[in-house]
Amino acid sequence: MFDLRYHMASLAAVFVALLIGILVGVGMSGKVDDAEKQELIRQRDDLQNRLAASGESRANFTREQKAIRAFVKNAYPSLIAERLRGKQFAVLFVGAVDAGVRRDIERTLMDSGSSAPIRMRALKLPIDPEKIKGELDGDLARYRRAGLDDLGRELALELIDGGETPAWDALTPLLVEEKAGSFRRAVDGVVVARTVKAQVGQTALFLSGLYSALADIDVPTIGVEDSGVSESAVGTWSHAGLSTVDDIETPVGRLALALLLSGSPIGNYGVNKSAEDGIVPPIEPLTFPQGG
Image (cartoon, rainbow, N blue to C red):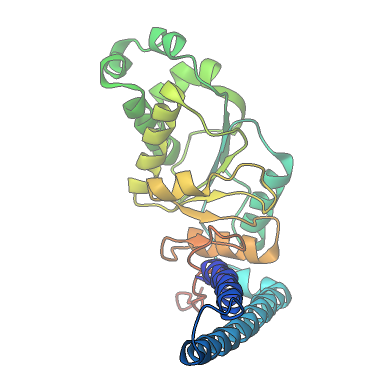
């Protein structure tokens, strides 16, 4: 819990400094006897020592973070190579395509022995519920009664399974802003990136069903963003049960994505405060079948 520890240490330092100021102020007021003054001085000295230790811990922590990032940057080619060999993935943009994020995702896949995503869809948001319901005929009519969260779940299932995709076929003109690749084959995982602000109302309900289904299906789905994003989606994705990477533009971020797509435990990784599980997941050695 790298950044969480740093945050707590910072809060502790501020709190200790405040207490020092209070104790010194009371000690100088002249309203306490000598014994009480001595006790205040003792407490002040103790707090000052804690503050110094807190500062040293933050400095050590910062050095630790830098060392980890430097190590991963230098070892990146060896650590990521062949992690995703033979696997294929889909990319879903919640909003318009971000060319930089798309490039970083594709680089991750290529560096790790996979190929470019076999399909990409960018959603046009916010949705128009009435227009969508107007397209729900035949077998899709049940989603008019079930609700847009169930429709989101169906789209998630089709995105992963491929093959027959009646929901995507019917709703692509209304829902999709940009697309690439086909639904011919199933995928081994999905990478999600959000480029719009947090949605509300029916659109939020639709996305909630989509994210929840992606989290429930037995293939990894990872939400990614760059470290300078204006409005983070990490909290939303984490609440839905997805893993997250908050610094996809860096070698450590790309390695974290590759590790998660290869089956590392679910978690929140990166360099921001939301990265509660560290900078990268545990790095397990690669094993290959004999003769492969």
